[in-house]
Amino acid sequence: MAGLLDHSCVGRVSQSNPAFGDVSVADKPSADKPSADVSNADAPIVQVRDLCKTYSGWSFRGRRDINALGGVSLEARAGDVFGLLGPNGAGKTTMIKILLGVVKPTSGSASMFGQRAGSTAARCRVGYLPESLRVDRHHTARTALGFYGRLSRMSSAEIDRRSDELLELVGLRGRDNESVRRFSKGMYQRLGLAQALMHDPDLLVLDEPTDGLDPVGRNEVRKVIERLRDLGKTIFLNSHILQEVEMVCSRVAIMAGGKLLAIGSIDELASPTDAANVLIDARAALGHGDSIHLPPEIDPATCSVIARVAGAATHRVTLLSPDQAAVDRLIDVLRQHGHSIVRLENKRPSLEDTFMRLVGQV
Image (cartoon, rainbow, N blue to C red; front, side, top):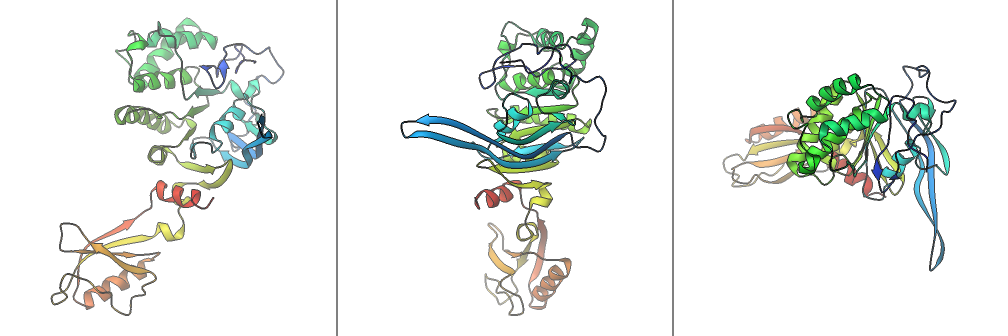
């Protein structure tokens, strides 16, 4: 299989990864190499249109087709931290393989920087961290970065300068001459982020960057991604860890079964019913015992008493889909009936709430 990048341009997407084959081979020079930045500043960095991928195979029952992607369309723009979220088998990795040119789509189109996905012009501007990074164990962090720098045809001075910058960025300064065989998985992933950034790519593609890490390792990797986000780097990542995506991503696409279910910011993805829950902790009026009964003027379809708050003499009331006027009316009515308002909280749904709602509809 051809390599994932042309070594004659500064950049590479090349790993020893079983999913991609053990490859680190240069493409032959081609006409689509970038001689200048031809992309429009307002154009999407990543653009996918009606993308389909069908894998065909055989079993004892005969021919079997698997639809890994079924008509997916999405865009990611400069400065986005774009999260591709879905359960196992959703089609996330297939999407990334198509963007990197490892897999050809059955139909539809995919482009990066206005160039065909998989072309040399596109690949030279991408840094890639696979789900299972492989670095020869004889390397130190610094010699590993030197190896990847030489693959990108960087000079020794450029390699030294860039290695210093990236080891500082990912928090491995002081461990740079230590053998990678002694690294924790979190340190190993941070080294992977550094190698993906070695040629200063315009787009960083991360495949399950925190999968298999303990909480400390996840926190370390997430902090690096947050630093890159704050520096304005465009990041396209896939993950099934909802909390991580919610913490770092500006836009999210939710997939299941090869289909795109929704796309947008986390606030945009939340449905009206989920997004406007207001929780009110109220203390029952004297003479009402231990319970709060909603006055008859409160619509039970939009308001209900959830339960008594554990360890407190208060009850939690939830108001669904309220505007500010609805909240004010509820508070006024509760007070008129002698109940005291202890706490008011606007509850925004988590990405998990939205994800479970959408995937549950498939």
